[in-house]
Amino acid sequence: MGMTLTEKILARHANKKSVSPGDNLWVDVDVLMTHDVCGPGTIEIFRREFGPNARVWDREKVVIIPDHYIFTTDVYARRNIDILREFALEQGIRYFYDVGSPEYKGVCHVALAEEGHTRPGEVLFGTDSHTCTAGAFGEFATGIGNTDAGFIMGTGRLWVKVPPTMRFVFDGEMPSYLMAKDLILHIIGDMGVDGATYKAMEFTGEGISMLSVEEHMTLCNMAIEAGGKNGIIAPDDKTLAFVRQRTNRAFEVVYGDHDAGYESVKVYHLKEMEPVVAKPHSPDNKALVREVKGTRIDRCYIGSCTGGKMEDFKAAARIFRRNSVKVETYVVPATTEVERRLREETMDGETLYSIFEKAGAKISDGASCAACLGGPADTFGRLSGSEVCISTTNRNFPGRMGSKQSQVYLASPLTVAASAVRGVITDPREFV
Image (cartoon, rainbow, N blue to C red; front, side, top):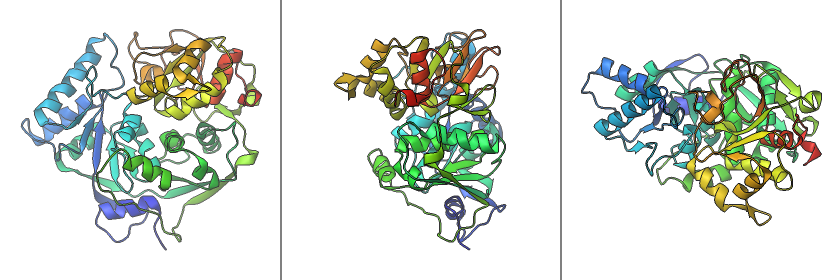
């Protein structure tokens, strides 16, 4: 029996001809990413275990991206940035995207892709659960804790158990009213937040091939919300073109074997699917949008690593271009590149930025995680009371976006935009 895409990548990085689910391996690491929340802890462990004068195993393979609690006066958050800054200077880290500098990029998971750090066939670890986003590029990418990250800093290797692979096939053409967010919320709602615990989630089918690279990122991003070890999609021509435009570093494309063994195969027929939301307070609390249509909302939020990319904003602009919002609506670009493109790219002769502005949305003047993880009290768009919010983010646990008394519905950018225009949760098929 052959190997799945995940198994093949891990086998190559362990210098083995073949591996099977459950095998424990030492794998060589291509990229280690950390940010301002977990970076200081990782650095502390690295210094404690390898010595105060230790050097990272490869200064060009450690990527540091502050993005979570950065535009704030909170002294502890600012101290974290100082620790990263001092460490990057001391170690000569080549890829440190310092906040407040021309190199600043924004949300780590999107910035990694934009800057060419996500490459097919490689192994990427990050001190953030949504590191699995990079599986969209046909690589093994997953989140780890500070201890594992500190070990990688010193050795460039990690002990990994090979996960079994669950395959999700999407048949048929992608309807105009569905987005990748609907697909992954369907899956999570069907299997629960622990249904894929320590398993690889591989996405394939005609519907997946029709999606853009950024939509692939959305699917893989939320594999962790199902408990998955990693999400992964075999690279196609548009994926390879995306990567080659952003890096001249050599990489080896890997594909799964035709006779690979999967733990399970689930087939979805896109023509039978509808827009969905995840109701409070869990990503698996699925409901069809039409089932909660008319639910009161106080706020709409379009942003984050899941919902703050260009494809997300283009989808929202399709609805906003001829309509105004009826509730407080925030637009938060994930990265500085997205922020720039909002001001440059047009729809019907008007920039996306102008469309959002005329619709009455509040546009962030800085790219970051912002309210997705709540954070300090002065975090942009933070929920402060018992508001009801519909958001393109990836988690809706109590207190996730600020107040524990708030309620957060998760949805696609199309559904959030339609809801912003109506002032209640609204099915995007009324507009699209």
